[in-house]
Amino acid sequence: MRTRRTRHSIGTAAGVVAFATVGALLVPAAAYANHEIYYTESVEWYVGDIEGDVEDGYTYDYENDAYGWNFNGLDEVGYLTLTDTVQGTWNFEDDDDDAVLSIVQGGTSVITMTGTTAGWAHPYTVVLTLTLAGNYVHWQYDISNPTNPDGLLNSSVSFEGENEAGTDSVYVESGTTLVVDDTGIGAPVVGYNAVTNGIFGGWDAVNGDPDVEVSADDASQFDVYVVLHGYTPCANGFTLAKAAVTALVPTLPATFGERYNDAGACITWTPLSLIRGVPVNQVLVYTIDPALTTPFDDWYSVSESYFIDEIVSSVVENLPAGLTATSDQQLDGSFIVTISGTPTTSGTFTSRLLFAQDSGGGFNQIRSNVAITVADPQLAATGTDLLVPIGLGSLLLMTGLGMAVIARRRLA
Image 1 (cartoon, helix red, strand yellow):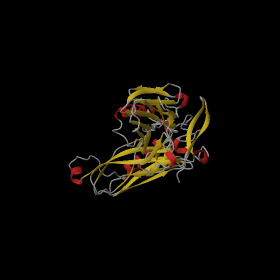
Image 2 (tube, rainbow, N blue to C red):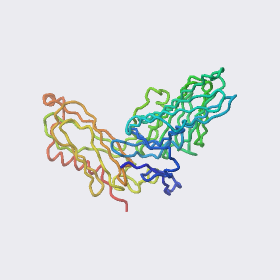
Image 3 (cartoon, rainbow, N blue to C red):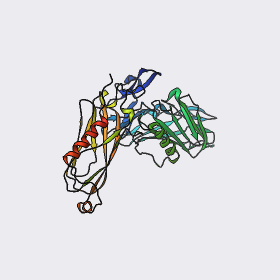
Image 4 (cartoon, rainbow, N blue to C red):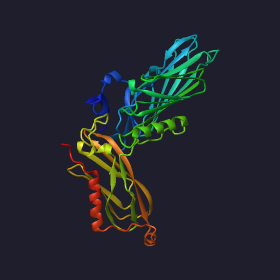
């Protein structure tokens, strides 16, 4: 069962910090009667279908029902204000609460809303097409005023929102793009790009202030793209996530809809070489980032170490044909992953191993890849593939390595 996350606080040596866990709705449902939780394959969003606002933005593996490491990225983003210098100011709302919904949980969802400036001598019509896909959100506003002799010449629009980075917000603005983060305290990195056929008015964003605004004049088309990228506490995760978002935002909308795993490799697997048609029963060897093997006292909120603080579930995906995997957590927290069977297809494969802590639902997910090469027997015989089936002594040695790398005793 999927449950919406809520934020809690813990005390640390540095003070009180927020972190994410799985729980009930933070706000009573009645307060957000027009809001729903929608999932893409990789993010959970909380969306309003009257004003078109989007909240939350937790990295989330829909297929395996497991959250990433960060708390949410957006507080409330997606409020449009239209101003006509002659007729007045209007905040976008869908007319008659009749948004058209095309929702695919775990896929791409599209919500279409239409608002009009009723009561104005020359009313505007604004059509919002809101699309959720992968790690992205896209607000597309189409603005028209067919009865106004001045057309859109007296008009301007502004798009506003608030980032979850809060008073820790740090912005990097470049032309139509904006990147915001909280220096790795726990919010995902968020990138914006505004695209318009009007006169771009620039971003209004100040370090230490969560509020952002972007505007344009005389626009019949106004689009805002958001990309969200999470990170783990491992291997420069925050730095990698920020670099990824910084590189992505200028390319929008070209990359819209893509999925991104949380940055920062927590587990690195030794590549596996096999021979087609030769049975195998082999323990995978891997190394663990130190961030997982010591007590966590920051936003990731693990009191001892990743593998002994909670029960950890595991999933192995995309194995070559003929192979299966078993993944067993030992009493001391160690994990043994064994590949067995007889590979039937030669080639180079990338299999995925997923770990997630299981306290009331999967969270703090770790996604990692292991490269598996299956060689043809005749190539192995000529030395192209240097690995031959391991004997019992080698298997026991590799088993010991796997356990030694991951096993961690509880702190006294």
